[in-house]
Every structure is written in structure tokens, then in C-alpha cells.
Amino acid sequence: MEHTISVLVQNESGVLSRISGLFARRGFNILSLAVGCTERPEISRITMTVKGDNRTIEQLIKQLYKLINVLKVQNITNIPCVERELILIKINMKQVNRTHILEIANIFRAKVVDLSNDFLILEVTGDPGKIVAIEQILNQYDIIEIARTGKIALIRESNVNTKFLKSSFNMQMNHI
Image: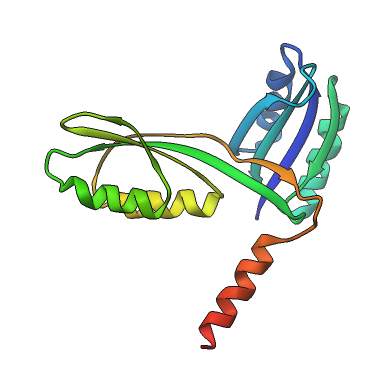
């Protein structure tokens, strides 16, 4: 199972190296990684997506707490969160009707951030499901390059679980 881990650390050089070294020594593959300053410039938030069972992730969290400069570690996988990713997609449009791609971009609220005679770059921001969906649809075209950020997430103070709401909505629609 994929887990999302949020780690608050002191914003000092070498912290990310120590954390990634811990993962490497334990044989973990980090599927997604995003790092940035928080509301306090001396603290950074590291958001990682890793695979593992609950017991293994609990052990990993204990190991993270042992590292110097680690302030707080949370497994936010099952906590209501706002999750976002960003993807840039460069598409070769020599053989393609440009309007098809622009229609897809419009449906996904993507932004055209660069345009030339033969190429188009789209910027898409959204929850991980939206990013996967547009990438799958655009795979039928000649994608030249993709750059994708890691997932970032903050816990919802409202405790509204949008994953639950989406699944409830889909179940209701299936009964109609």
C-alpha cells in the first residue's frame, strides 16, 4: 500500500541526505518527494510517498524520529488532506489537430504555458488522480517530455474526507 508521510525538519543542509540515506539503507523506494519551506523559514516540510505495510511504515517513522533535525513525522495516508501535484507536459503537435489537445486542456483546467508552431507545453495542477487522468488521455499524442512534482499535502482542519465523498458520490451515480 502507498503511504504519504509528512516530515517537518530544521531547514539545514544535509537533512534531506540523511533522510534519503535512511530510506536507501532500509531498501525503501521513495515514489514521490517534495520539499519546501513552511510558514517558518527555518523549518521545511518533506512530503514523501512510499510503499509498505502499516507495520513497516511505523518502524520507518520511528527511525526518522531518531535522525537529527527531524521535528515531527506523520503518516497522513488515512487523514483527510488537501493533496496537490503539478505536471508539465510537452507535446509534439506536428501531426495533431491542435484543437483536440486544447479541448482536453480546457476540460482539465490546464494552462498553456508555452506554444510554438510544433510544440505545446501544458501545466496541470490538481489532486494525484487528476494528474494521472490527463496523462493517460494525452498518451495518445506524441508526448516529448514530462516533468512532475511530488505530492504535497496539508491536513484538513475541517476533517472533511474528500476521498470518501467522491466514492459515495460515485456509488450513488452507479445506482441511478
